Length: 538
Image (tube, rainbow, N blue to C red; front, top):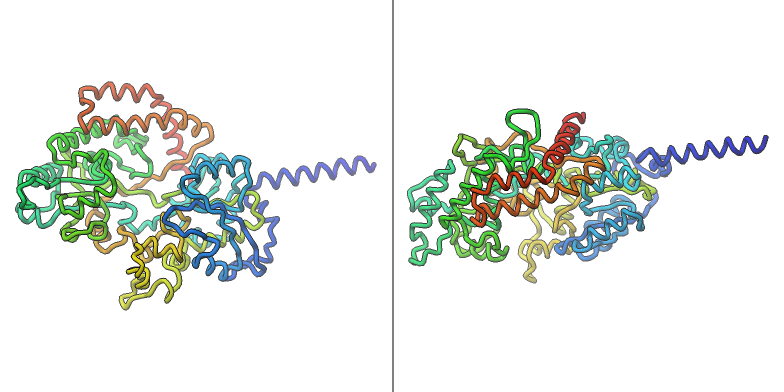
């Protein structure tokens, strides 16, 4: 009789353990001392708790997050002490993978940029816990964002219906950040040539040709560069909408929507993409594009900008990024109408920029408190603290209600630039952080008055429906790893060769056949399935 009872009790224990292992966030919360967690306000917990966070650290960020103003202040507010294990960018992928695949797990990954395929893999295994219930119960700021913008929650949802990570978000209304850069023209050169800002691809060509053929600098040496940028890709970003491709934004890579049916399209094999490359090749071949654009160094681009040689460019606000006497001479461009009447600005990213910016692990004994801790950074109050610091110490509010860093940071007496000066107090330089980037608190070039005005100038031509990066099943991820990256790499290599003239467009059919022979059909089947799942998410 005692043996039977022992067997029954043993079975009950096993069932309970199995239930705990399979219930994601709820089982973890059930083990937590929820009496210690306050539902709202600060502190988050009454009795102090400690957590170990694994964090990616960019070279521009603070040296030691265990003793930096932002997190010292937040510790006092929350009663939660975070022990930061900082991993420099160059070793991030290797050490993150080691921790996830059997090493010592932290309580959470922060700034770790976990790839989408790994989020789902380790979420299904239980290494990363499901956050659905935790968001419902302990993340009012995230809930509000999901309700306002359902596309955010959809982009984070995996094929099993679970959310396993939290993102770096662009405020959906912060357009100049979401498009990142804009086209710019030298207004004084337009005036001298008697031209307006180009509105079509033909007018753009005419302006570039006029710049090349006119001694606008006035030294007779032909230093004028009609168009220059940090990469040829930036010109293509601008022109995609002029040729009817990339019609679902940039986050989905080389995928967009077939204009004739509700299917994904791989646009680098379309006639429209070929025509765009032919146009850009013509510009390059005639010397209207900076001739070393395929190998141009970052510093050289900005040195050229300072010298005032660019007749047009594609960058964030030149007045913020260029030095020299001509930095204020640029005026913003518009979406160009293409040869077949297409006119759209399609290079805009989905608000979910980095899906795997934050994740909670199975070893975390305080998941509810952790969710409350991170949720604060999806609010205005939290991002004011994170991006600006403490009023009177690191920032001031002007008479116009604008936020600005104190003079010691804006004009550092030791000659430190903004990132260097601010990293003594805050950890955002370098990016990748979980939270929502708001225009009011963002002090990069994308947030300048001129960048915001430039974005407004093209707002009417922005595409309406922007896709995120899709999520995939384990089997789909394995296949995409096997051949998807090869397809995309080949497209990038051939793009440059067609534009530079290293490959003739007479070889276009061979290029298409090569891609089709790299399992393109299966690649598209996977993407179509992912797209359909995305569409079905409530």
